[in-house]
Image (cartoon, rainbow, N blue to C red; front, top):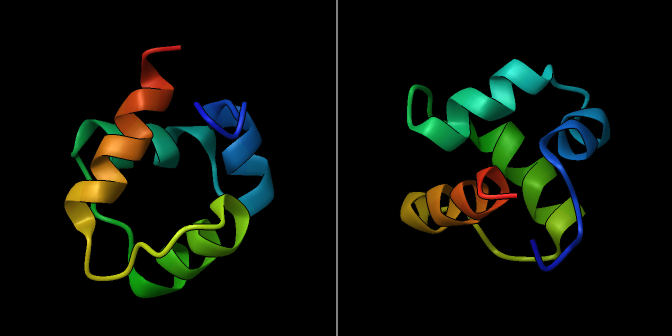
Length: 64
C-alpha cells in the first residue's frame, strides 16, 4: 500500500502472473529466494527470512 502498487503492478515489475502474486498473498504459495529478491528490489525492503512480513505486505495489497 505504501508503494501505491497493485497486484498487477507488482506482477508486471517482477515478470510474474497476477495469479501468482495472488497465491503468495493468500498463502497458497510461498515465493522462492529469487522472487523474494525481486520483491526486495522493487519494494525497497528486506524480506528474505521474513515470510510473515511478506505475507503481511501482500495482504495489505489485497485490501485495496
